[in-house]
Length: 509
Image (cartoon, rainbow, N blue to C red; front, side, top):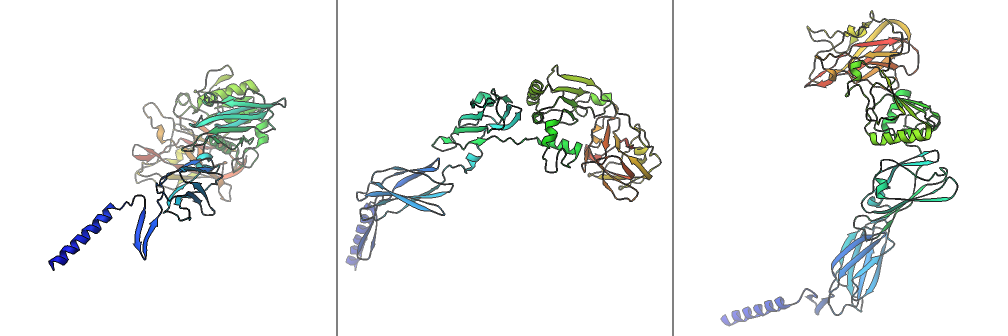
C-alpha cells in the first residue's frame, strides 16, 4: 500500500515538473484525441494610429519558426477585406477607408494557411465627415461684401492649422490669391487688400493637423457665402421696431436685402453687441443713436440704466471707421449712449433727445382695475397711473413670489389713438429703488367690442428703467379705435421680495 502511494506521489511530481517547464509564451498546446494540437504563435503589441482616410497598423511578430505570413484583416458593418504580408513585416497602412469604425485583426499563418489566435483592436480614420474635421476652424468666422471689398471677422488661428489662403477673382478679372496667417487672424476685422469681383466665388483652402492624425490634412475647399448675415440682437431690434411682415424683416429673421441696400439712415435705441450689421448697408449715410429715448437729466447721467451700451467696442469702432471711408457714414449720438466708441470727427454729440409734441387724452376719469387685489388696509393707488401726474405712482404691496399685475383701463368710450405713453417713477437721491421699475410690459387694446389684441409688434415691450424716463410705444397698425387698454406688468426681485412701481400710463392721439 505504501509502495503504491509513493509511486503515485512520484508520478504527480513528475507531471507537475513537465507542466512547469512547458513554454506557453510562444506556442499553445493541448492534449486531445490522438495527440498534440499545435497553435501558431500570435502577434502581440497591436496598435492602430488613425490617418487621413487610412489606419496605420503596428504589431510585434512572434518568434515561432513555422510562421510564413502575417494576415491583416479589417472589417466594418458593411465590408471586410484583408491582406497577406511577408513574415517579419511589422506595419501596414490600410488606405482608402471611409467614415466608419473598423475592427482590425492581425494573425500569423503557416505555409498551410493555418492561422494563429487573433489579436484585434478598433479604430476610426479621419475623413471629411469626422467630427474633429467638421469642427476644425475655418478661420473666417463672418464675411461681408461691401461693394468690391471683402471684410472678414476671424475665429482665430487654431492649433494645428498649417496654411490658409483665399482664392478669388479681382475686380479687373485676374485671379487673386491671399495667404492668411496667425497675425492677420488675430485682428478683429480685416479688409482684403485686393478689390474683388463679388459675383465670383471666394474660396478658402486650408491644411493642418488634427489630434492623433499622422497625416497633413488638406481640408475640402470652402466657398464663402454671399448671403448677408445679421446678429441676433440686431434682428430682435428690427422685429420690435418694425414688425415681421417681411417688408424689413420676417418672422424667421430674414432681413430684406432691398431695405438694407437702400437704407440711408438708421436709428438705434438699444444695447447691442457690435455694429457689424452695418456692413450689410452699402448706402448708409447716417447712424442716429438714442434719438427716440427720452431721459431726464439724472437718467442721462445714469451709466447703468440711462446709457445704451456696445459690448464689443473694438469691432464697432473698426466698423464705423470702414463705413465712414466707404460710404461717408456719420454718427449722431444723443445724450450719453455708446460711450465705448472712440472720439472721432464723424461722431457728433447731439445733446438731449427731446420728447416730440404729442397730444394725450385726459383719461383721469376712466376706470382702472387690477387682477390682484390690495391687502386689507393697503392701497396701491392704481388710479395714480392715469391721473396725468408723473409725481404720483402706483405701488402694490411687496410679495414673496413674482406676480404679474394685469391692469385693465376702460376709457368709457372709443377714441382714436396712435400709441401708449409710459412714464417711470422719478427716484430721488434718498429713494434709490430703481430696481423695482418694470423692465417689461405687455399691452393689449380693444375697441368697444372688447376683443383684445396686441398693441405693438411684440408680446412684451422692453422699458427703459432710468429715473423718470418716458417711453412711447406706437401701435403696430397705426391709428386705431380704442376703448379698453390692458397692460401686464411683472414685479421685480428686490432684496428678498418682489416689488414694482410705475408713475403713468397714457394714450396719445
